Image (cartoon, rainbow, N blue to C red; front, side, top):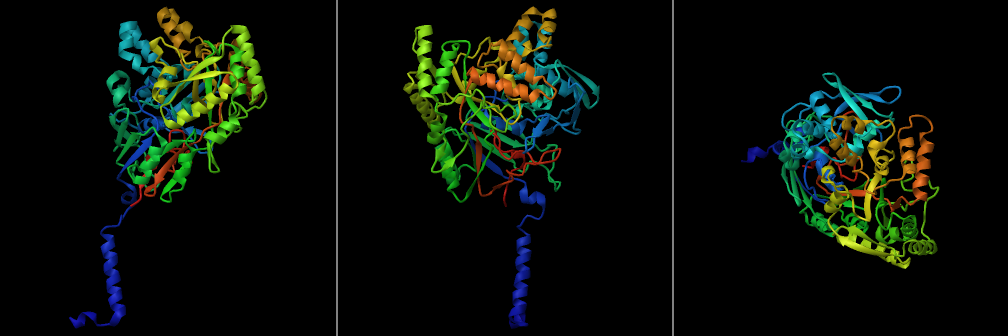
Length: 589
């Protein structure tokens, strides 16, 4: 055996090095696909997904699940610009009343059908409520409601400015509007909530509710209130820059974990690979995440403008003094310090307007700040006018942090002589009650509804919630056209127009200001938006709260959450209220 070692130590070392490299080559990933593709994740979320159909609306982390299955015609770059996604392009006419939209080629839904002009028009008509109207026209109101009510949602009111959609070619349509609108692409994007569905979702209610078919990187395998399992779409239309088929992951399991402390424990123990959070009362838990060296926390900008909606249609907030009393009694600076700050770590911003400083509607004029003496003054005025003490009830989620925030707010009200009662319900139920199904005949009956409806830097996800009825806008003849063929259906659509008005606004002056700003296409638009903000603040239309940031925490092996590249170029937002874009997430090998 001695001859094997002839040549000394250097030759032996060289032989061993070659052997080591050969050995490693048998186990190390040898291609970009092998380095990233495969594997499973378990993610903790703080919202329940109650179904995959149009209604009820998915909130925050549940929205992130939906965005993994469904995609929209547009997406948002990290700087806020709206860019085509499933769409390839969209161009306006000179008066912004007609928009020509071209689809991106080669995209299929999970059921194998193509995303073509027929599918696009069906989606658009369903979002406007006209798919439902067509079924009702064929089989009558009762049978049509049974067959197609699942296609109705908040989009009916949200897209009320759309007049018609017509095919131009095999891949192009023209969308005509009742009023010119410069930010119509933002309306279609709908803050990431416009989903393009397979036509079979509209024809098959059970599929739509439990296993909807989109174009997204993942498909539904299981959907319950407490757990959703998504599996990889093997025919997804996108590849990464290296030509590797997306998505990378084989499966994602989303577990509903309501308590933030349990989400942190899951991350630390390894039972969760990632978890989503909100800054609303959860800063202590975000601090604990940041102390873990093997976890990474990524936060969104503070562009989510939390508020509570006063119900203007019922007592006590159909009275201006009641709204002013609560507005002056709310000490947002103290609330931010006690609920959203922990050991020097603070997320969100104390409001100085109903929207944040980066939003085009931002205006400090007329904004109400904490003043206990004025709060008591308006409490007295309310009692003098009504003979009643100022009392109201607020729905509050079941989580310990939500309850703690509500109790602090309750204490602030008490100091002003206002009684606030707490009604405990889960967030999904609260959302469903505040935005009831359009065919239910119901309206929001909460006196006071905490929510985060305003967000971003633009107006497309703010102005729709401030008008009494979307179909009452100037030049909008939708209800008149429907009434010509079916007065009963027109009455139902009139109710649809109020579905995204949880505050139940009915102020003609406010409507005029909203529509005057929304449909202004010239240089005065900015001034009109700020005038609207001033009016809303002076009339205490809503109660602003500290803005929110949303976050996601990842274990060390999870990568790719901060490099979401859009189909039309540029980077998408790393984290939104919906979480990360799971299409580009992978496990380090």
